[in-house]
Length: 545
Image 1 (spheres, rainbow, N blue to C red):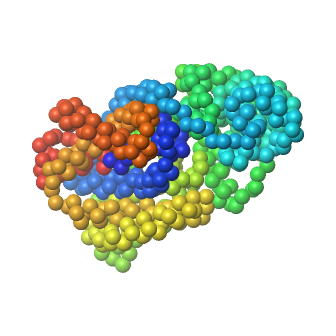
Image 2: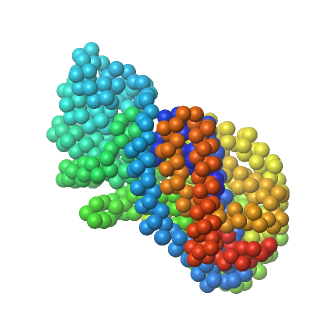
Image 3: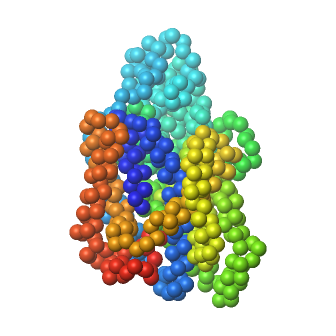
């Protein structure tokens, strides 16, 4: 939980779509983000499985479900109506006051398009520049830039100069996608009138109309990263509504024409087909007159892991309900046989399967994040393997210790070998399938061994910090984003600003926990009764585990 605060506090200091992008950046924070993201949530679900099995074995299935409903489901739902709207209010305020970083330098034509200077664009077009070539920085073609910028005159001049209407970018997105994504309905209308294909699909099988569901925060972050003005949320929503009205009558999925692209190997075709199905209209509903995708539309923000855990507990309950009681005896026998370590070896190998489907929105180190109502199957499988091994580790405590006692070797191998290789090979699907799951598993096992070695003895201070971490993570996002916005106007460098954000956020959050949570019913909801937390050997599971 505390590493999650570190992770989010770092995100304004390296180029990534986020509420606040500080003018002073440091690429090392990108490495810090990747290093934490690569193992943090897998470790969380590993621990979750362990303590789920603990509560089940000690108190039974009924008590487990009641406890998890109180500790997990109810806080998740309460967060949707409290922390979630507060975060969006704070995020809008924070983003509006952040000084914009100087945009990356571009060649004259692209710079003129980005700045909206129509006369400079016309001057550059008279030089006979090749309009099929992308810029050297972002690899975006001129008409795509014009569609993202939304200046109808510039778009008209580019089309008149024979800029390709249906030429895809590196992901197969045509200019019509760009215009719809940015909510420029006038540009969408112009492109359609001049023959742009509304049924052109990108490499994920998505049509121009499908990009209308992209989250507002992600859209603003991408446009700001490109050096374009971030959109007003209301104006973006209205522009996309009008673009939808224009695209709906002319969109025919059965006649969709693929953008020319390499066929790819069988794995790439399977992955594209999977995401095409996952993001299809069959999972879309209409909510208050607006399209709402049950998978792609963000709902839970940083509380997504609680919703995932609800699915895990439901699956666990179904499994133990269907398995007969004699399975415990067979389970114990398996822990002493030749294949006693089979479950963990099998899980490590099996993690390569869902890992093959990661990185749908670009190469990354670590699992994808999904904040919608429906959990993508590849993520459910990925985290479910860690959860299942956690259950196994409780039942086979002596075997699990044989894995964690090598914690020095696991951490060294992970940080010195696997992490650098994973970073270097981010663009390689083959290497990522092998290296990234190994990094997640060995870092998780190494952390377990490290804490068993140094933090196994009861400590009131560590217990207090452990109890508070659940609340700190739930409540930290509005605080961190607000502090990032405040320091964005200060000098001092990214490292100093990051330190200031952390030094201010943690005490503020701890104070709120001590005064507003710990002695109140909210503290009981998140952590159980206070007197139980004072016992040296707690008999209940940690709240978020």
